[in-house]
Image (cartoon, rainbow, N blue to C red; front, side, top):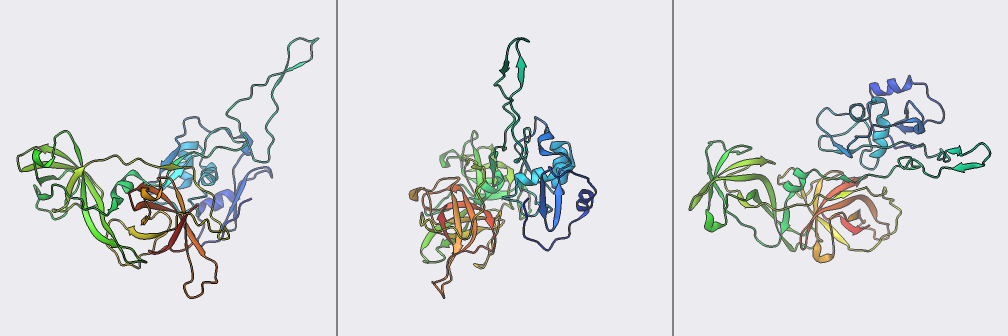
Amino acid sequence: MRSFRKFPLTVFCMVFVFSAITVTAEKTSWTYDGVEYRIPKPADQLQLPEDIPESHTVVSGNTLWGISNQYLNDPFLWPLVWEENMDTISNPHRIYPGDIVKLPSGILIATDTEVPEPARVLTDPDETETVVTEIDPTRRQARERKPFEVITPGDLIASGMISSEKITGPPIIAAETTAYNLAFNDVIFVEGGPEDGISLDESYFVMRERRHVRHPVSNRNLGTMYNIVGQAEILCLGDTISSARISKSYTNILRGDFLVPKYDLPMPVTTGSPPFDRCDPSTGTLPGTIIDAFVAGQDFADAVIMARGDIAYIDLGSDDGVAPGDYFTVFTRDADDPRLPRFVSGEIMVVNVGNTTSTVVITQSNTAIFLGDAIELK
């Protein structure tokens, strides 16, 4: 039985529904906030649909109850969905738009249930038993963890990068609309033509120079943050001014934003990592620092507070051997009393790598995470 620390939460109607179900002692159960949840059948009697996708992206109004009904054809099996996501969903009654919910699949066998012996047949009444060694390969003691995305493609693109080199491109100088903020489907005019590298056959990111970034600990200059605010397609190619249509917008697009050729951003996937243990010893591998944060593309004060699901940046990159999918532990130390052990505050996963900096997603947090917090490779 799993138990989790209490949150200040009122459990709604699903608690009443589950309390009315009669179940046997063999059935898998989960406990949250003092309430025990059980699936309506023993785990070894459940047959899930064969066409379940690997994951579901949460939209407004979704609940685990509804997601279970949609994909498992039974809303009462929602604890199975929660079990698949306990590393990222600590509160089963709170999921948010953009969350990636992993979905279970296959024939389930309870962890305390023995795998059935192979079927036995008699080839002839006078012969001894012959064992049929082939077992249904879909039956397994423990379900494999499926890879899943820890960040949506839109957030990965919009988060951009911190670059030590200046990035420039043909700027947006006007638009057909008089509105200050530009968005999807607006026609814009770009200062540039073929000699500036603009082509009808190419797609473009709309990029914005956000701010200069200095290291929060050493104060050294790290470069400039660039965020991608949208995408554009060229409509008409001119000698010095070309027209384009905004094909995607991740936030408001402004005159002065500029175009760069669209580039591929591989989407890293993971099967998750074990919950961090604050008593784990330090690895001392690839020590670094959280240097900045992406908060809906807006500027913010240095006192920004980050938690699970937020996007941040670290002062390590490909030059340091960092690769997408790497996990780092986030921790702090008491500057006033160095005798105290480090305090582990969370975990991050690398999703995009530059030469000297990388973009990360906070995958676990047990307290607030701040700029300047230390990191090390798990």
